[in-house]
Length: 132
Image (cartoon, rainbow, N blue to C red; front, top):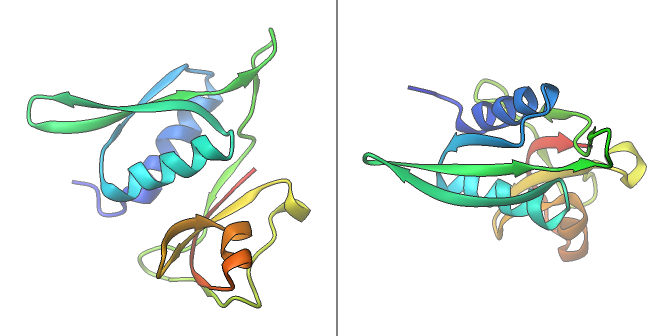
């Protein structure tokens, strides 16, 4: 049993990305579906779909690569807020990842969103991870 589903999801994506796998299987939760949706909207992954095996649901995430050399689109994924140490940012102190080249995923009162969208709405929240 995994205690930190977000860290597990990010680690699975990071490991599959390092060895240039096309597809990675992740246990499906509401949080992992929301993160996968944000990654797809921001162009870090190609697509994802929900897959059932026995009584469990999984996300099949298609990773994205550029060109014939299959250069990685995701350079790095970093977990920020952990179960032992939560990290929050208010609307005025939202993080900027690599001067706008990357994104931060936030858990806000309006749901999961990127740091750019939270800045537009003027809300803060828990900083889950950085992706660039």
